[in-house]
Image 1 (cartoon, helix red, strand yellow):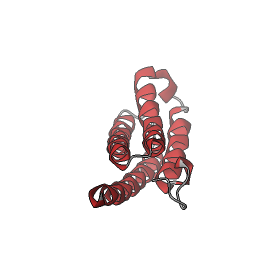
Image 2 (cartoon, rainbow, N blue to C red; image 1 turned 90 degrees about the vertical axis):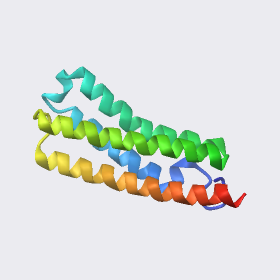
Image 3 (cartoon, rainbow, N blue to C red; image 1 turned 135 degrees about the vertical axis):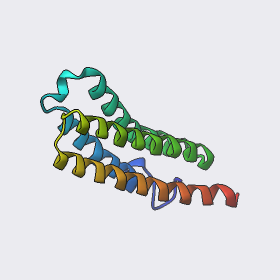
Length: 127
């Protein structure tokens, strides 16, 4: 993990995209009527922050098997975000356009995390 190319967690494209997703989530959850639904707002915000946090923590552990586990958790949090976006759309908290933008970004983050997972898994199995 800590190679010449990737020395810090914020060098990871997956983390950078997760950061972008987090900003988008906070933007859409800050618009009315979303703020009034404390439960859903908190859950989706925590899930998106979890993506970034797990990628960072796993990377910093410096052990590929542990990093792999944190990547799995980050990917699951990404799915949680997408699921909650459907709820927000269905109950009218976000528009279809907002949903499409954030859901597409979330799907992109998930794909990038999946690629990272495959790469780290290859490193693990080489040892």
